[in-house]
Structure formats: structure tokens, C-alpha cells
Length: 151
Image (cartoon, rainbow, N blue to C red):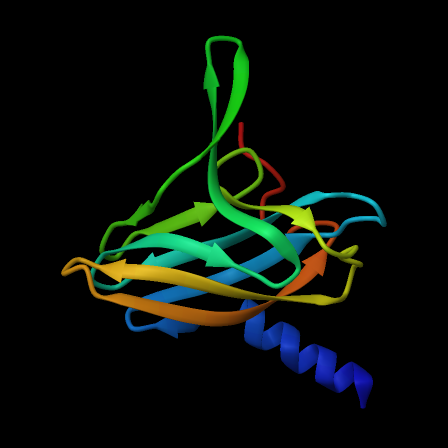
């Protein structure tokens, strides 16, 4: 029974979810150990008509922000971004080493095979806001078939 419930939850989180016209696939959060204060959440976002990811929240972290990592000279830099454009019909990947959701001030460890409730906040091209509630599986690695990092 417990395995069926977990399987159903994982399928729901990894499957396509919609907030108006935004689809979320392959979502996962990197597992942590007790005392660790930060982690990352990763996923693919596709907007049918174009939108922006303008915020993220979760009860497991004091702070959840969209971050960008990029090389500046010989140094990899990470910074929070106020929003992330989701061009119409194009998939935007949040992945290790690129855009991602940074979870900071964790309130508890995030063990493998647990789930993290998360709210994604969007604005469409007209500025109309919407939210999407998801349960994201916690793992030590990306879902099967996903690249671990890009070069």
C-alpha cells in the first residue's frame, strides 16, 4: 500500500502538471543530510502561450528563489533572478549548473524518496498571475534519462 501511494505521488510529480498553460515535467529536489541548510530543485517548464516564473515557495525552506549559474571569466557565479522567461512553446530546463530553484534555510533534512510540496508562481503575457501546487520527489540524482549536468 505504501509503495503504491509513493509510486502514485512520484508519477504525479514527474508527469505533466498545468497552471493555466504551463507544463512541469521531470521535477526533482536534491536530497540532503541533517544539518544541511541548502538544496536545489530542478525541472522542465513549458508554456503554451508564453509566461514568466515569478516566484517559488515551500514550507521546507525559509527562502526559495530562482537562481542562475553562469561563467564570468574563469569563475562560476550564482545569483537570484527576479523572474524567468518561458517563451511560448519552448521548454526551459532548470538543472544543476544552470537555472534552478535554490532552497535555503532548510527547516529539515530532505531524505531520498520523500517529497517536497512546492508552489510555483507564474504571470502570463498579460500580467495575470497563477500558481501551481506540486509535490516534488527527492532524489540523489536526476530522474532516469535526464542528463546529470551540461558541458
